[in-house]
Image (cartoon, one colour):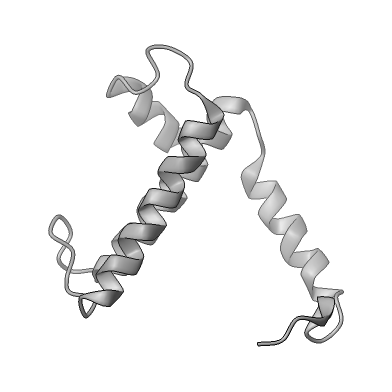
Length: 100
C-alpha cells in the first residue's frame, strides 16, 4: 500500500525534488490537527469522502503521509508496525508508570 501511495504522489508532482523530513513530519501533525478540529465541530462527514467522518478522513491522510514518507526513504513501516505490536504485547499492564 505504501508503494501505491508513494507512486501516486510521485505522479502528482510531490517528489520532483527531495523533500525535507522535518517538513513532512510537520504535515503529518497538520492532519492530526485537522482531525482534532473535526471532533471539535461534531465530527461531520468529510467534504471529499462524505461516507466517512472528518476524523476518519484526517487519520487516513496522516497514515497516507506516513506511508509516503517511509516509502520515499526506503523504510519498512509495515514491518515496524508488526514488530511494534508484537513488542507491545510483551509489556506489562499500563507500563511506564504513567497515569491515565
